[in-house]
Image (cartoon, rainbow, N blue to C red; front, side):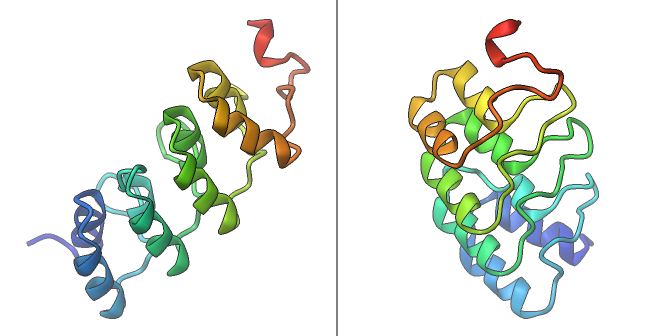
Length: 140
């Protein structure tokens, strides 16, 4: 039988808001890790902004890093161009200046993929535009 956190992550990945809310009401830890070491927010389909907001409003940590790639959910949402999810993450405390293992900010990933609306959003938050090695995203 699957653990409660695995059930919560499965419900999150499948977009089942009702099941997510039931499991949270039962006390399943919103930032718990499933068997793949990921949280419910890390497995949600980022285009499902209502569920992203539900998880965040129930205490999901938007700055938790992926155990393999060291990305945050904001990196993922920016890279894929999910404008509404980027807004939801920012509104709920996402740090837009966290870098991944390659020193990329969410801004860099959005720019690389051509998601100009996400770039505009992140620029208005005074993102660090240069990588921490002093090179800009254009210096590759």
